[in-house]
Length: 55
Image (cartoon, rainbow, N blue to C red; front, top):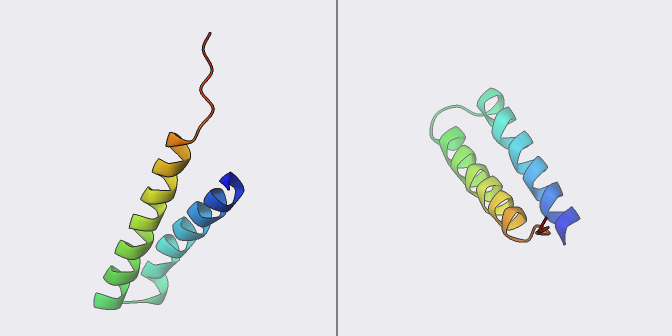
């Protein structure tokens, strides 16, 4: 599960970064928002499912 979330996070970040070079205007904004939300969701899920160690 975590491997898939890491993969989704990395792909979303890569697409988000490259969208500014490939698209222009409204399509670029739509792709950027969609991949940004996907990256945030994957990052938050990874944070919430981390192993908590008590020292």
